[in-house]
Length: 365
Image 1 (tube, one colour):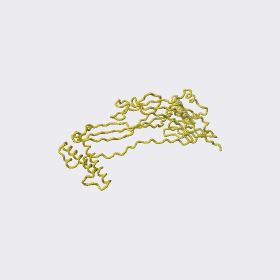
Image 2: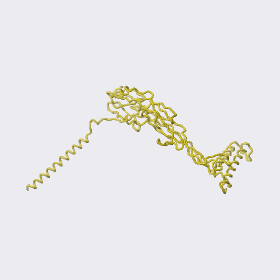
Image 3: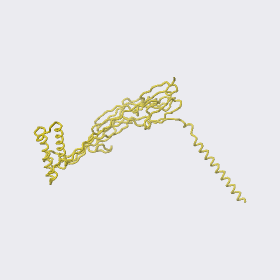
Image 4: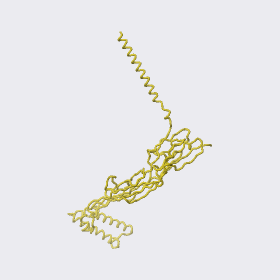
């Protein structure tokens, strides 16, 4: 009997402990669900920009394929031609445009308090602050290279007569092709002198006949001289200057491989150097970092002007001067600009994050 009573007591205690645990769990969940009053602050996060450089390189690629009869070019055409295929590259031009990337070290949150007269905040898709209470500045789209359409390649066999196509040996075929080339040249000369057996009736017909003869000769000469195909492509190299440097490798370019990896010593090095035009005083930069009384998290860049040089080996090629947001200093703007009686429209430079325009509007009627 005593044993049964003890078991009931233990069961009762277990039920009570389970009930206490459930109540404690419910209380804990309710406290977790309640938001912290310190976190109930509406705001818009944004970045200030870094000013980056986009180098656009126009690269010409030349591919040479030797002709089938290249070994007979000296004998029949008295020309020395290439005997091996070759591919070469040439850097035609280099242009530079600046663009903006988010500066992850300058991420801020703009407080959106009801007491502030901030109606809209404009940002880029990647979060760079552009304007407040105003329309942002637009940047012109950079022009892109558009390659010209290439003419269809000529097939020499389309211009060969039956004797050439049925020649029993390569040497015989080469001799007949050479003879056909000289016959075409003779026909062209007779047309130019007006001595051809069948002269065209007008200038348009003469032009068509001359173009046809030129096309036939080019196609047949390819059998000896080979073909050269030229393609021009656009290559983009991006660079973000972050500090003053004397020489920093930008890319390497090879005559035989084009743009190559930075550690590929077959390419000639192209460097950049970065220098400040007018460095900011350290005292002024330190004062700019001090918080103001009405700080609402609105920061802007005061960019510095830098000079960047593109150097090929040891020879300077181009020099670029522009303002960069990551150089200079940052400043905080007072929340008093967006009061109840007046507000401001602020537009930032989309490339540097500096103030482009600021206009005050009176809200009193």
